[in-house]
Image 1 (tube, one colour):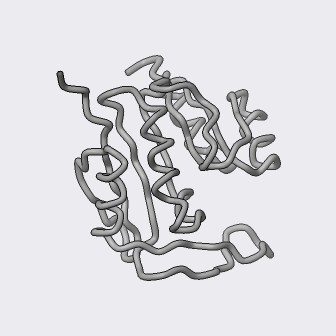
Image 2: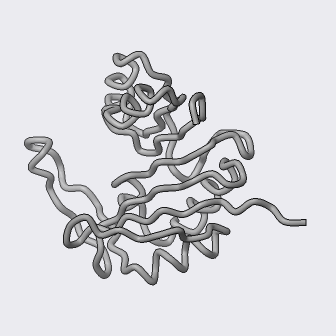
Length: 163
């Protein structure tokens, strides 16, 4: 996997990008926040400013996509097109790891981690909803983890194309 291109979608300050770089992978951090991208670039890592709906990458360029605690900030009605866009950018056999807050509906919350931050939007999902969305986008579900109550991590792959 050395040299594999990894898209960290919603990279925030770049903690995970730096981890991937330490594993000799080639991460690229994508985020809508210019301030967060400055922090990633300070680590010497490549970034691109974009939203989840408009991934300006060529088809099948990533060997993996990491969307950890990021996609859940997008409205539910946008999720089918977001997942199709992610699928398009991934090479056959590439893994996707997503993490969502489990529940129903949506909510606005303040994070104590970032001090006096404005409330953030969270789209809440149940496992069956996420499975259906991922499968409709073309992904194969490898497994589901619940590391803590209310958190759902799903590992999926873009299947190899069959003749």
